[in-house]
Image (cartoon, rainbow, N blue to C red; front, side, top):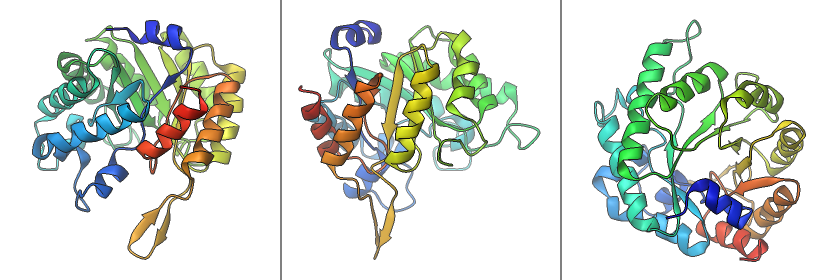
Length: 289
């Protein structure tokens, strides 16, 4: 089984997967159900989506564990089961990916603001991400991915927690949902400055807003970043049409932007909210796979 570093060196660019939640909704997940619930209740469907992305050309898939930290699960039906859910999510992805593809252990923010703005303390945060990272590693993840972060304190505490229990490659990706800034005002330049000493395997952006915003983010990242650049944008800004949420960026449009990101230095590309296996297949074709 190739390592993240070895496969990245061999291929030059790695193609990640697309959205989880929006695809699960298309597959029948009821409104209000957390995707992590399907790890327990519908593991066959979790594995099916992984396989769809792999068949479309993904080199790596992310586990269905974005919201599986203990603080995030604390008030729901999976309270107290963070380790179990994360480990099982990694096992499902590992089975789908086989030995030829990579599994990234997905860890999202806790949903709490760090003190003094909110209740999240360093001790709780470090412990939560240590628990989740250990479970993902035990389940077979090849790398660990902190994604959609918006606050620097939480991200740094999460990195501390992960590094305390695992030496797997670690990527950190931020959501710049205010255009070229995160909700807490972080810029790509600030992210790079804070993470440069930490030796991360990749740094970048996912989710966010429009592709035009992501274009600007890539420009700022490539001017500052030494580590491989990770870029997974949404398929545009969602719009409500009747009872449905529609993402208007077509597979061809997303592929054109992804190819441009690669030309400008991105090393890992894929999609986030609204991106389907068809979007990933289009990127794969654009990359000449």
